[in-house]
Image 1 (cartoon, rainbow, N blue to C red):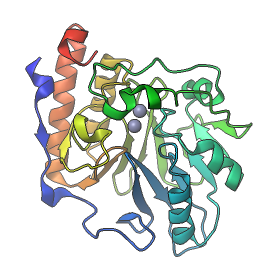
Image 2 (cartoon, helix red, strand yellow; image 1 turned 90 degrees about the horizontal axis):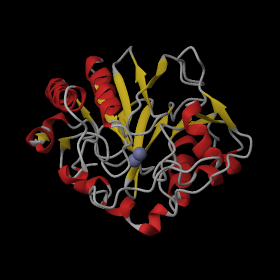
Image 3 (cartoon, rainbow, N blue to C red; image 1 turned 135 degrees about the horizontal axis):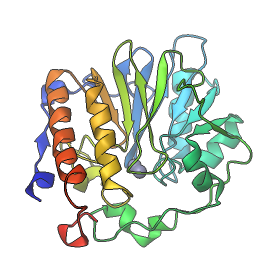
Image 4 (cartoon, protein in one colour; image 1 turned 60 degrees about the vertical axis):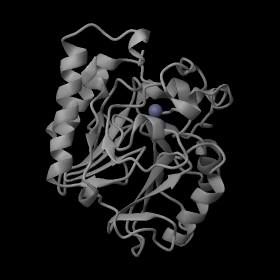
Length: 287
Ligand SMILES: [Zn+2]
Ligand SMILES: [Zn+2]
């Protein structure tokens, strides 16, 4: 299983957020796209902060970060509420502030239908595998956050035609494996990819650590990934897009050719390992 432990180190020059923190606490990627790291997970802000168009929040961070997220949104968009919240999936580090924010702004929430039972509290995810190196999320304290969220009637299915509400030019892509209803967001015109937890741009060890210094590509967070062969297929789908800009929910943003080469290699590694071989066991450390 040596392939899985291969580290695909990312080139520091490929970082896409070299301008540093903006006044609003976000990191600039494009005129209409920024992200903020909230404790351990990224949230993305789509929309031009200088315009009057609607904006969209992608994911809602870990529990307890609502004030920080609201402050960034207020400073960035001048108090305008988003038109919608889009969820890549419903793990606790992505829906931590969902209930509070969706109520505060009174906005619709869009997620893949396969994630709806988790958002609505009809199902709970399996507990994180404590032996899989998930760090913070493997701890019982945060595992208890895998509880019903109840979107209070605001939850909607993503449009069946692949479009994303209030995000013209963007499409959602079903990228299951890490979670059954996991999606990634893709804009063809400038080849921008928001990959959620389908892959990490930091090491597994630092994905759930407060600091995040390693710059590397690796597969989805091990502790919570449900279906590794499907996760491998999703990685292949994302690599085939040949993105110019890549933002994962854990790690920093990257752009350019060396990132694409790393993504190709990561996808090949996983497809080889999980599509043509037996799934790994707990002894391999990632079950
Ligand atoms: Zn996740
Ligand atoms: Zn995550």
